[in-house]
Amino acid sequence: MGGAGLTARIRGADGWPVPHAVLTVTDMSGRQLTRAVADDTGAVSTEPLPPGVHTAVLTAAGYEPAARAVQISAAGRAALGDLALTAVAEAVAVPPAGPWTIDPAHSSVLVTARHLGISSIKARFGTVRGRLEVAPVFEESTGRAEIDAAGIDTGIAMRDTHLRSADFLDVGNYPLITYTGTGMRRTGADTWVMSGELMVHGQRRPVDLDLTYGGFGADPWGGVRAAFHAETLLRRADFAIDYNAMVRAGVAAVGTTVKLDLDIQVVQGDRLPQA
Image 1 (cartoon, one colour):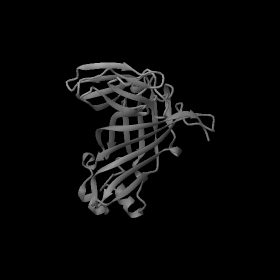
Image 2 (image 1 turned 90 degrees about the vertical axis):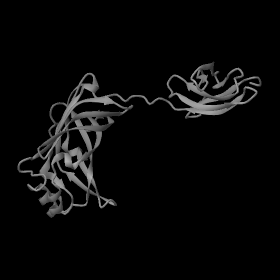
Image 3 (image 1 turned 135 degrees about the vertical axis):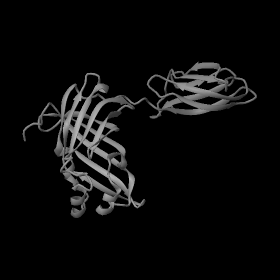
Image 4 (image 1 turned 120 degrees about the vertical axis):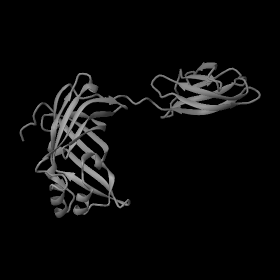
């Protein structure tokens, strides 16, 4: 490579060479100056280049593109050394199409709110049920989850009783917290955003859930299960939760936003198996 311009040796994250990686060099205006292909050892070199700062772009099948700014000397040369490319994450297999039923025994709902700006208050809801309708095109899947509002548990019985009262969640009039998902868009190999509507305290608002999919497989009871983690941030004012009620409930110093986390297992089919 003595008479070469820009040189590099391309590796994967595991240290193995990436043959046939492509090195493209452009000037600062985006005009291509040269293009070269790595050999079987991952080594690549170009002809001498115009002096100055240029951009080196590396691409290879199955790897994320990488770009580097490079200073070319007056002799038209520079060395990038060893460069590691990151493999593209493979998309996980989605669940088969059809109905999937939430298993309350293996699902949980947690709400976290900041308290006094220095700590958190956590509330769990004891029961969540519902169904996911997996579409042949996974992004068109829909779902519905129901949470018993009376199941709120902050670990303090007196507070929980007050939170269930008409001052707060008013579980007598609004016994269910519901979420209806209307579709999804993929954001990564195992992540999606589900769009839908959340109803709390009789107030219905559009809410997006960030989903992480854990995969699916057979369970020990002869069924097939899939797992998801979902989370979002909510503004309590959107759901008509009165601040004076919070004062009386002893949680006045709670922040204006709360974080909702759901860990959901679903079982293939339109009903849970008999125990």
